[in-house]
Image (cartoon, rainbow, N blue to C red; front, top):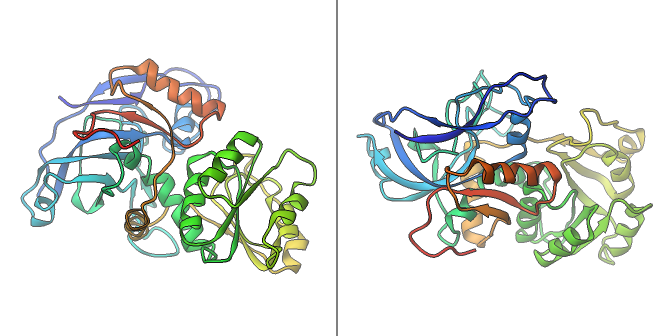
Length: 363
C-alpha cells in the first residue's frame, strides 16, 4: 500500500501548536481513464507547509499527504489516449487546480485548490505514488535532476506570474528589485528576470545571501538593515537609468514607502506575500508617482506550462539549499528541513528525495 507523510492532530491553538509528522497509508486506487500514476522521485517544501504545521493556513487538515511540489515518472495510466501518452515520462506536477487560463484569477467557483495538507485538495506530493489527472502534468525539463525539478513548481509558478505576468518589466535594460533574496520565490524571480534580460538587484539582511545572488546573476545587492539602503541602491543602478522599474516583494511592510523613492513614475510593485504582517500602508507619495501596486499569488495552468517551457528553453536551474535522501523513512530528517525553514537559514529550496534518479544526480 502506498505510503505518505501527513500531519497528526494534537491539542493546541493556531500559531502555538506544532503538528507532528506521521507516516500514513493511502489507498492504491486504479487510475481513471484520464488519470496517471506517478512514482514520485522528489518533493519540496514551501512556506505554506510550515504554516500548516502551525494551523495558520486555511483548510489545514489531517490524513492528507503534505507538499505541493513534486517530480516523478509515470508508471501506469488510464485507458484514455491523453493519459497513455505520458507512460514512462518524467514529469512535474501542477501544484494546484481550479485555474485554467484566465489572467485575472481562478475560474473555479471554489477557488484555487493547492496540493498538500488541506481539505481543499486530497492530494499531496510527499508520497511514493500519486494518482492525478494527466492534464496536470508537464514533462520535466531534461537538463534538471529530479531534485531540481521538484524544486520548481510552486515557487516557479508564483515567481513567473509576479515577474512575467504582473510586473510587465521583465525586459532587456529594465531595472527590477527583488526583495528578501534567499527564499524560493525570490530566487526564481531573480532567475526569470535575469534570463529575460533585465538588470536584477536584490535586498537581504544577509551579506552572504547577497553575495550568492550575485553569483546567480544579480547585478547588485543591498542590505536592508543598513540605514538609507534605498539611496545606496540608487548609487549602484546603471548610469543611464537611475530608477527602478518594478519591485517584486514578498514581505510587505514599508515596501510602498521605499518604493516611492526608488520607482520611476508609473512603476510597479508586485506583492506575492506579507511576511512582516497582514497590513501595508499605501502612501500619497506613491499615488503622486502613479505607482501600481499589484497583488499576485500562484498562477494558472497556462502560466505553469509557459513557466516550465521557459525553464527548459533558457536552461534555468532552480536553487536547492538542502536535500535529504532517506525518502519517506526518516521523519526526523524531514523535520530538519522544516527547522531550516523556521530559522530562515536556507538559500533556495528544501527537498526530500523519495526515489533516486536512474541517472547520476546533476546537482
